[in-house]
Amino acid sequence: MERLIKERLPRHVAIIMDGNGRWAEKRSLGRIEGHRQGVKAIRDTVKAARRLGIKVLTLYAFSQENWSRPPKEVRALMRLLKEYLEGELKEMLDNNIRLVAIGNLEDLPPDVRRTLRETIRKTRSKNGMVLNLAISYSGRAEILRAVKKICQDHSKGKLRTQGITSEVFSRYLFTNELPEPDLLIRTSGESRISNFMLWQIAYTEIYVTDTFWPDFRRKDFIKALLDYQKRERRFGLTRRQLTG
Ligand code: FPP
Image (tube, rainbow, N blue to C red):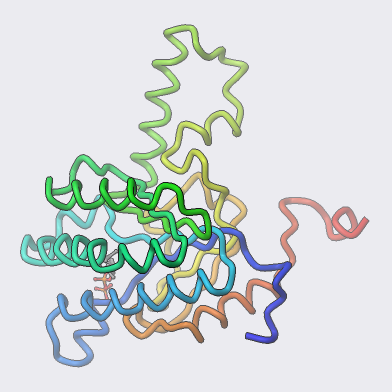
């Protein structure tokens, strides 16, 4: 903790929480127990991020592809999500955390959607940290959705072809008001992006840990942040250009 340089903390950390199933399998438990333990890791990580001064924390909670998992597992994940939102509302309010969500939220069961909407509304004025949940999320679908909206605005005469810059395009994404992630953490040792924030991670630093998500704790988070602080982010420039 002491070794962390406060001025060089990533503003936005995104996490691909992976390995719940394997964590459970190793213990001869059902996959759902892995997800249940995964929620504990979420609580711990949100608390750590808030205390460390991270401004935006994005968690990949459920991908659009995850709808094709066995119905029992999908139902359990939806139930855990709803329980998490209900159980953590007070914690969010007390800790000045604003909840937002990205993804095809209209795919969610009505009760989960209602709880999500309510949590977003109740935490709207909080400004200590943004907790961004990616739910029913697909990076490609997000880009296609942006392209369609741009086409609509173009045909209505609201947008000229020359006006479609990177900055303008970014505003059509779900992440509209959020900064791009500085650090992407993936647990469970897999070096894949899995259709996550494809546009937004163009210059994001990637950190992969072998730890399964249910075992991920504050110390693992700090390890990732320390690793990030050792990196030189050049955004395509030379070292000399950066150091002047
Ligand atoms: C991946 O593990 C994890 C997920 C499918 C998403 C994470 C979900 C939770 C921690 C619980 C619910 C979410 C919230 C926000 C309360 P996996 O099942 O793909 O693991 P495996 O690759 O080992 O099978």
